[in-house]
Image (tube, rainbow, N blue to C red; front, side, top):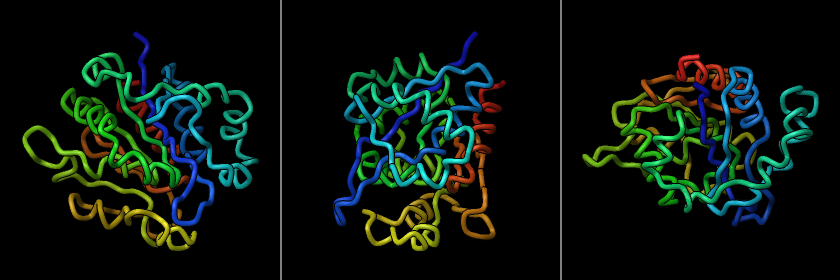
Length: 230
């Protein structure tokens, strides 16, 4: 039977403090998408507002020579131009109909996903179904406010990674974000990171799969495929 993954993108297109453009980061969707499709997995895209989910255009130039990123940008624009609004997804039905939940990064997710009640409800249901929940770079920000019905944080007792404070600082982003993701995750989970900034790092802890940065996206895709039993 064909596997189906629900990928949730940001609807945030602007950093409030600076007015500069943001969105989702190209290879953080393109690389896992390529690995999933190679394995025969279908991928459906959703976002808080639905419709076009903003691509962070600053992610295009650095990855122009990356085949998966170029191919995705060239041929799959219709996917992120027509995302499903999270509000129309019934969390229980989604956790039944999809085999995994995936949150690509980019700075955009930091501004709309942590507080989005529909996203939080989806994550709770996928957790209850013990289905894979994957996130890369700033994508794990979607998990910071998720508590389970028993009152425990979804990451309680888990080991995770995400973009590090040092990596955000090196990009001049740290002070423009609503919170420091490494710091927030460290309050509720064991946070680990690569030995040097922007080295690839993926952590699999049960059904929670997290990647540190854009260079971790390919490995995260491979880990998600494996978690799907493919």
